[in-house]
Image (cartoon, rainbow, N blue to C red; front, side, top):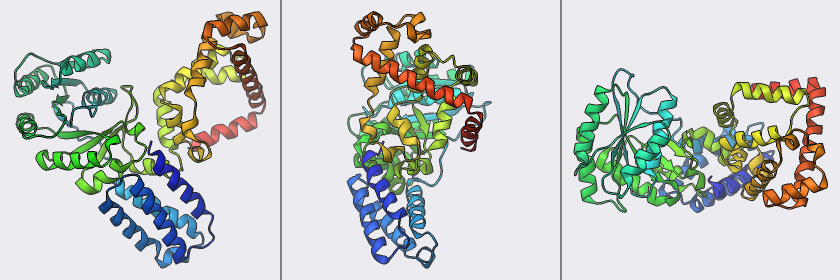
Length: 443
């Protein structure tokens, strides 16, 4: 996620934070590095110029130059200006009460991930206690209606669809259906094209008049950089969008779209798509994203992810097993499953302060974890509960069953043995354990 920009700015932060004083040359050099990093990230040139000028103006103030810790002050200025560039604060959806219908119109080009994002948003609202109806109003793309119906069914979200020649008829009937069946949130998946054309915009304008949406959300592919910004500008001029959802944000190595959209269109990024799973849709927090970019991590989002994926009872049971020294290979396997629910290891590493700077997140080999899973799954339940019975002949059998080697089986068992030793030490040292838990509580 914004890997190139993050690497450059994280390095700059490390350099500047160590300076005992900041001179005009220090500021000039640092700002030049920021400028190059932003341009390489495909940020709009006008946005870069505006950002650089404002940052220079504040960084050259007497308050900074006379500060006790000017290096940290400069980083604070850089942080605040980047947050400002992204929109200052998170912008949530405008939702009416549950006694009436909130209508959300999803628009975007074909291939931007609009249909999948529609389902993700529906799931997000369901998790907030809303009664959601998805409307299949994309009658242009082949199988678009079927895709929405299948995804909706798989995720427990009702989908309204009907055979019709025009989407205007579909949205009219969907609104009537939603009113009769007491839905409080209706999300309309509309047609996209491979390019913006008059017919497409005329159709969307007609749908807008019928629906009178509370939100018009543009789904834009973050990986297209400045193209996404121009698309957002065009849609806003035609429909007056209320916000943007950046899909494929987890794959965006540069970040040009995220850092340009708010400045160019004046419209906020409301959500980001962070993976292929339906749960991989996050509210866009400018301050948290900037913290990740600068290598400061995002502990708040990490904790929220953990809370959403790991039940309290599971956490208590894990704690009990560690303290009673009964943590088995089956428990080890279960932890893999829980971590996978939270997203990719690279995404998790980006949220841990300093982790992104200390390791090459691209080098994280999730294939090794899959191998370890396969090895444990090739064991009998008895072997998982008592790894000491795994003799050389059993190791050969496990290696064959998992498609790995005896060396890899041995390596896993050694790793697990070291982990158990560490857990025993933690269980004995209650004082240390309480200190660690207290630190987590503070975060």
